[in-house]
Image: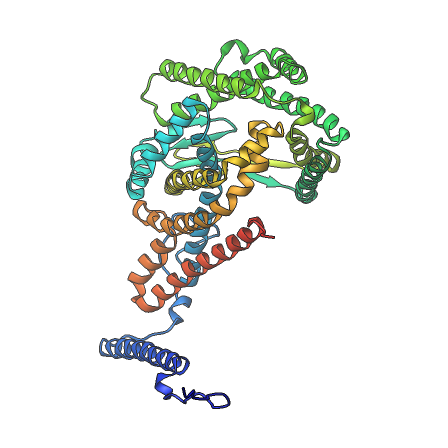
Length: 512
């Protein structure tokens, strides 16, 4: 049988069009050429249409006088300001809403996501009802509700509701004190930054020691006990002082308030600590709910609001009592009170030593309006509140999904090590869940930033309202205005994505 010998012979050459590499390059050149031709046709066609309408292009309009008012800006504004300043005002207003909304939506979303997985039946059901209700109602409708049904339904200026800390709320928005620090307060700001770094460093060091030895350093444990008593005293004093506004018997009984705070601090070092915390939780819940409900629903009877707030306070106190009754001893707990005391105590000490002064300009009601302080318009408050409430519902689901993605064996392994529920969540579950939570969390941050443009529907002067609305109507520079607006949102999105991708890389699980 004859066998053809191909050894030493070269492979047959194929046509270039049949070469997959050459063919792929050719296809890319053709597609690129079509894209360039499409944009060239768009640009030429647009230029011809603008020339036919005797319209010019360019960004010279940015240096013309705007001639209109903006209801809320972060810098001085008048009708003589330029269009570029209007662009900057809208940009800063959008950035302000996005930053505040992302911060509060993250806190609320994480709390709701963890609460939905709580073993407590009441907490889990309340979180479920919140999430399922809020995320199925259109955001625009929610903004209308908060703006027209809540904030615009507030009383007039002369009948404003007074909230704690000299804060007033009425139809014209929220009036808060304006901080007026002196030159020495710069040292306090430096101390705040350094104390935060120190608190984080102590927390990391204590955690590493416990990971290596199985227990926290003795010095940290002793300091944490003292810090726990100090923090309990301060929180109790604040809670009972606020409660005195609603309980006439405590209004002129300052010694009684201080004595009660001392008892709470002493109880925090004993086995009665859960009961002391439950009492403080009741006081804070009652004060916060009673204050908010009285301000939001002035037509409701005061006694009914107080009874409802008291019931909610009892429920919150009971939940806290059940949650802390089986807490591990202080030797096995993360020294959170110590870190709080470091972060807050050092700046307070620097404040006293340097003699710095932080005065507050309190808003004062005059004949027609408040004078002094900072006035936050109702449009800003409604937009921040609506975006926070809406986005938090989606973040909560992301957090729940991330926690569910962690293998059950991890929880069982943590239980076998004797870790309590809080430590299991903080040390084992959440760190592993973050690699699942962060990618969809980035999308929610981007959505919140873009949804801030809905503020135009309630009159908030953000970028779309000020620049794409008023500026475009007055100048007719549609291409330039739309291009700048698109560039701003694209920049916000890319910067947010870049930061979250960097953070995702930090928390990603390293494969070995």
